[in-house]
Image (cartoon, rainbow, N blue to C red):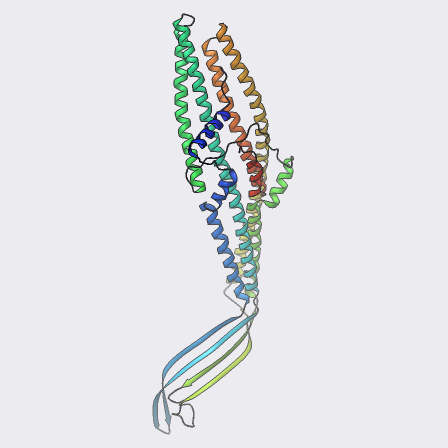
Length: 448
């Protein structure tokens, strides 16, 4: 008898389970939303982006006014000698001052501010890359579960068909129309199918655990693909267009470009060590002498206070620092060359990965079409072998081989379809354009 399609069997089992338990299967978008708020790798990148923005705000402070309050108290002793006569007395003083400054010309601080903002932007790009990685990991885990379900459904269908073939062989042997070899061959295939069923059950259990861990919930039940299905083709359909897009927009390449810009600014900041700095400084303060000010000739023991205020411009120009600045410039220039080489390496790597992803999708689509034809041919061959076995022109092993071939083809076809869908996401990830919106057309391919 012909084997039922594994997806048909899986859908039947899923509907029966839903009817029995009242549970609801989850779509790809639903599980992505759950993973987005749970995945630790994404949360780590999010926290890093927030920290980078805080560091950028700290660097901005180097160009803003600074204001501080200073206060203190002292106990003093003074000794005065006049014409051989010495007198001494202790006295107390209390002081407080408000001191402020405004940088007028600090090139190193300006460069540090620009570096901080670039670093914050790079952290946002890294966060976007982490989100793209999460999308691909979720889709892979989602379709790994479906592939495991397909494999289990196929092996169970095979086991059922082999069981029927075993029963037929035993009946034919009992009436003398077949040898014991047919029964033993069918029994061996049945035992093999049982072993494969056990392995498939464990594989499905492991894949579901991985998906559960990724989304932070237990008992996930992904919606299967609807049948029949038309796999989307990558757009644009030229590999060089994808490569050009990847070179411009891939998060890793963008981060490497920003790292090069930061390295260039670091060289500028090192050279700024030779330049002067100019600050506007102002202060106002008061000193109180509760026991009198001994420096006053009038009423030295009477309570006194002194108020001071100042405003001015201060320039600081380093002239020689023991060649520290020159050697720092040499270091930053070398690091700038390193960043440039890293960018070149990454651009080449991304271009190669993008080409591989594009051709992988194209090859996968062709493989799906070939396997669809192979599935039809395998089903026809099985039916022909079953008919031939009934009329005596085929032996039992021919039917068993045809059943195994159909099972293997159906399993490979399902796996190839999932690989194409995940490969499409990986291609967009390689090009740097992947977003949660790209899950919508795939989500629409799921059965409802």
